[in-house]
Length: 476
Ligand code: DQQ
Image (cartoon, rainbow, N blue to C red; front, side, top):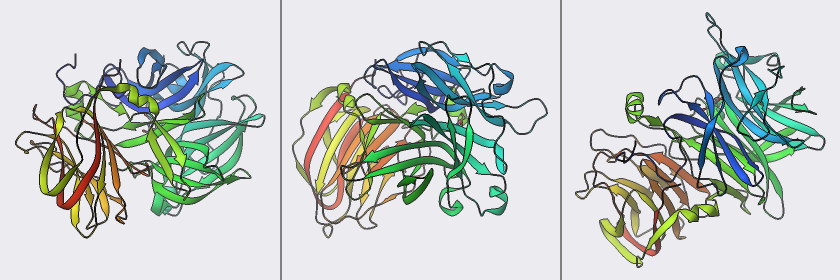
């Protein structure tokens, strides 16, 4: 159906067709990973949220399964919004956001609801849903959604992403995550906000919270990831969780590139924290509908905590299973080169390059992907030494219209080598910088069938000291 669609990713996860947004209910059960996702099966646009479902043994080859949850109850008639999965006494259980909006209502009321399963395929909604009857006083009933649940002693703990009622009006109160505790996932006690943001930094509503501990051998920190409205990007805070409060010590953009949103992660049986994020489209609604699909997951990622306290992300090792053919490429000098081709072409590629340079000798360097033979179309991953930033230059990604660039990532080019680890897949570009402390996910929509060339460039002098290239397989 999509054989000739050069924009459709081939090795990233996406549904067979139609709309997908947030990852939901990510869990490993009996060795298999289950990925649920916000899905509208009726078209490539957001409407009537369902939970789509797929499973995998290795996080990169997926089997599509029947839709898991539909908006078929009075309390979720407007949609089965995002949520998470846990195993409760051996029983796979999801907690999702039930949204009720009756005719004549202007806002949808959002409340947590529970469903259980034996096999993760067929789900039974709890008869007494929703399991919390109203948002706490002062919290907006229509901004009370998305869940992360973890075990603490004998209790289940849950966060719900929220906004205070006067936040939009006063501009004084930021987004928040509200903390609940339960013995059984259906009786919940409200414990208060875990953390409240500064509206100037993180907006006034936090969607899709994720919260987990991470150690680096000598200290353990907690990571809170949120997708703040109105920023349209995921952000993370690293800090201390004590006495049921989280005190952030650092705040950072979780992903640059303007496409990665609403991520969710889970502890797997290997002890890794494994995350997927939704890679939003950057083309018009009409173009998405015409394509017949919208939305794709990031590659699965995992985390480490650097000694300096930074969050380091990396694709999970299983991504290497997608490697098909390796292409040899010798180290090469770049001397005021607008484009030096690499000896591979394609739009399903992995490039891993290390650049050595003296910051006094070069103003810009980087990699070029999805370039047409005549250079009319091209996308550049730019290390901008002059302005101390890295960005993805989409200005010539698409010949039929100019594309805007997302905000750059500020960096310090000290003269240490820079590594760019790049994944290209149809319209998807993911880039890990250095040890994974910076990550980009972006989208491009070249119009030309020959926009398959890749290469490197420099304004000034740079040495590409190492470069590995692979063509990647379709995921099964
Ligand atoms: N998408 C879901 C919400 C969530 C938002 C609805 C984030 O639950 O807050 O599809 O993309």
